[in-house]
Length: 130
Image 1 (cartoon, helix red, strand yellow):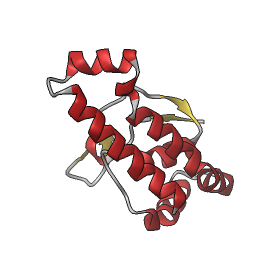
Image 2 (cartoon, one colour):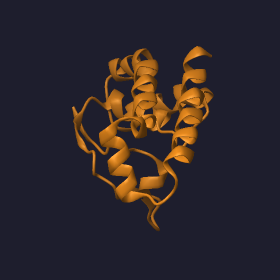
Image 3 (cartoon, rainbow, N blue to C red):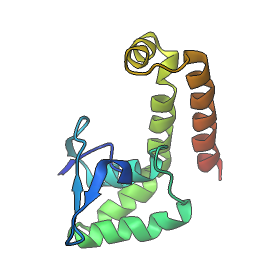
């Protein structure tokens, strides 16, 4: 288990002058399996990454953090499960709670957001089918 920012992506990170990365958004942080951090990084639609980089990334994270090879194996095995989770997240404007939360936070038209969310969900599903 590690402390994971959950919404792990370049959009929530800063690079300092020494080349170290710091995370600035811990809204959904928790104590998680490192495989979750690896999968969330690849599944977050706001920061798309090519599937071809997954192998290299999860091996580097596991190696750099001194994690066991089992973490890489779990990340590879669970990647599509996390993609399905992100499909559900991307469609949350279709739920009453998600719609009201986004209506409060965003001024854009809900119908347009829903169209964008469907496109995002389809893109993630296409990665599962690939």
